[in-house]
Length: 354
Image 1 (cartoon, rainbow, N blue to C red):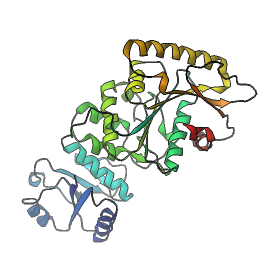
Image 2: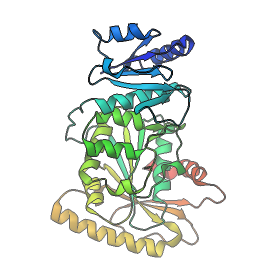
Image 3: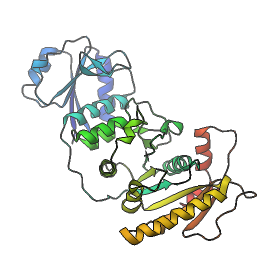
Image 4: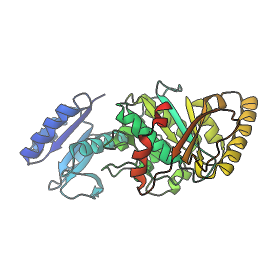
């Protein structure tokens, strides 16, 4: 479905450039009409359908002239302005992609949602997890997503950690975050697929992701059913070939649901720097997984692979007998920050074997 949008402004050069780039990059997603005369726009609204209209901030919007279900907002000359006179504001001085995403987000809030299917979809899902704190699960998950993107796969990295910070590994210019997705899931209003597209950020590597929540508490309010809806939505956008889920901690019902119902592969990350503790916790994880398989059905261990992070050939002791395939160990990288470590790990031969 194409978004029908209109802009009323006097800067013809700006509108011409915007229209040209929209036609080049989003011909199937948005239809953009340009107006320089206010009366002409309002007259046009009597017969033509519009989804979103943006007015130059110098123009006073006649709200009584805006049809129901049409989202009206302002084009702002100033960044970091969310609203003007109670209406949404879109900064004109930013990348065209950011302007498109903002328009798509406004459209998503004003339209009814499509009915999501209950199937998993065709997206390949790889889940990275650990019950051992500090093993570097997020680093390995982000590195895998980076590697897959650099191999020209369309990848979405979904961090479900309560206190996860995607900004440690990926970057994007947008201002929206996972908080906006959670709000959309809870309100059950608007078009979830469009909301996902408008909030998703694209790292220079090609990995797409959500900025971490503005307030970490928002993650505590996310329910298992809402996570199901989100995964189905990401799959049904049709944009992605692979979903990388990053979640660690206790073996909760949520983690079991993700492992049984969505993951085609489960990568368990153990700390190679403390293999005695790591191996013990992994063995107990396997014991619990066996019981869950017996009582609830489904496959967990058959999809699980063990990977050691910060591994030392001299000091680390890999598990002697494992219930799952052991992929091997990734060496510790010294003197590099979060993104640097992710890039180093992404280049290891081991990640290519996942």
